[in-house]
Image 1 (cartoon, rainbow over the protein chains, first blue to last red):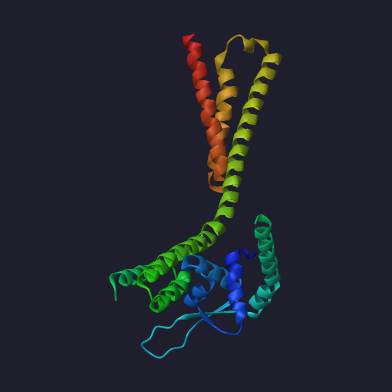
Image 2 (tube, chains in turn yellow, orange; image 1 turned 135 degrees about the horizontal axis):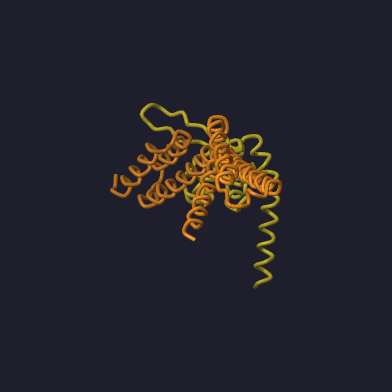
Length: 102
Length: 172
């Protein structure tokens, strides 16, 4: 299955690459990327379906509902690293374009 | 808890209860995050966005699980059935053509047949093929129903044509 690499997906992958071994909460990813839940969760679902993202339920003391956690799998990490340059190139292209326009 | 936050929680809770099994983990994950969103309105927007995401995900999964897997074999089966119906019709038409050929051959070798003796004509051109159609339909009905339907269809069209022919002959 091919993963559509939208700028939003690249942004999510970028956030995971900042601290690859850390588990992250959905709301924190949303805040860090600036993506709304309606955009973020379909990306997380697609990544998880393709085994690029590990999901887990947080172990908490009784009475408190657990939160869902996310982390890139080794495959996901490799995938994110492979596609990082394309984002950097994209950024450079956008910068060059905006400079040319001004 | 404010009314807006209550509404957001209830909305996601309702979706969680209605969601199919494969979506419940995600719906639950979205619901749990709601407690950590500071603003009530942000919580509501989070819930609304989450509902949209869940519906899209569930819809896609259902399509993949349901239609995606059934559509192709169903279409193949339908195409096969249509093919058998056409085969039945074509075979029946060939039979009628053969019967008419046989009749014209008989006319050629026995010219008095031309002088309006209707029964042999009817027998060879209509009753014989129709009998064969009925036998064919009955025999094929259990083994190859679509083909039997094709034969029956041809038989009905042929019978209608014959009836119209007789009607015009007697009235004209």
